[in-house]
Image 1 (cartoon, helix red, strand yellow):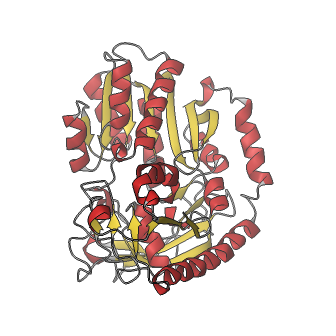
Image 2 (cartoon, helix red, strand yellow; image 1 turned 45 degrees about the vertical axis):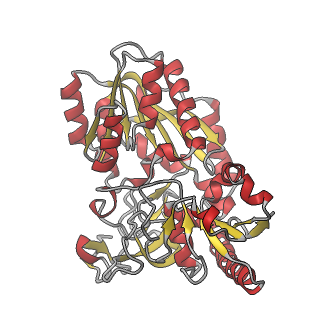
Image 3 (cartoon, helix red, strand yellow; image 1 turned 30 degrees about the horizontal axis):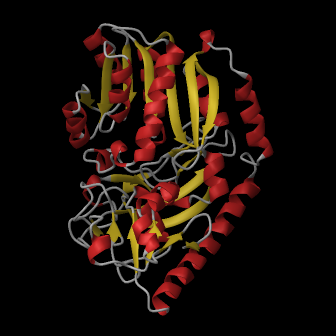
Length: 431
């Protein structure tokens, strides 16, 4: 089916969006029969924090997830132009100690596993503030380290940390540009939490195929679909995340470009990830873990329509329960604020109808977010010192996937009687 493209009245100045009448072809197999299972309404762009509570003309787009009944890839049915989301970006890899430590471990594992040598090229796609490449540079100072990211503000931070970073989207053209610049192909290519962002998957994978050196590895980390479904992590569905990856569809996409998965791991951070070690198909003998996970996906129902029907039913129940929990805090005479303003907070607030009347403010450690407002919801984002000057009784943990880290950081708040409301997979108050 050829998608009908029209100007979406809620798309603002950023232009074209797919209409609900004709969803785009499947990103992986090209089939046009994607099945809707999660309709989260029309929402603002999750990382486009605003300078005022409810700016006039704030663009909103339909947010709907579906599965392809042919290859079972889960994806958005409405895609927003990347330029509307990634030109300036507020998420920092270095903002979480858990994530910094995780990326440090990935750097050490990749350097050891690939025997990364002097003057060999390592490229990080979606390099953010350079956290991963900086860690790799400490392990192998003489390697060539190259980041690429479309957000100019993040590239500036990475360069300040000593990491060469190109401001561009990764595709076949930019891959060729990097090869020309360095005069070689990459021994290591990484994409941590950026692989789900790609609407032009064929050009992206063609770029990987061109840039990856013989014997090299393309290492992908992405929130794993199985964990998303198990945890009811609906708030990780937002416009930046075009794809929600399981191993089966990932291998389908890679094989079309002469690559395959050599090995695979499931990781516990930040809320369940898939790590795939990918190489040139003729050089790869998949480890037993690859077939084992594909079989586990079938057994878990990742290729069964009933799984997605159950997800939608559980989601409706969660939203009702969270609204009740929030109302219960205020009804008891206590004050409720939020902690952490990740992109997922915008989806959760929009779907559960939470605004500044329900959530007084959200504290966040990231200075790029402070003084702004949560997109669509108009909830103010403040510095963490607000916890001392205007202490609430309960904190809703929007960044619930980092709950142990946050609770440890906020132990004084807890000792003073403060409680945490963890919203997913079911709302619960933690003393």
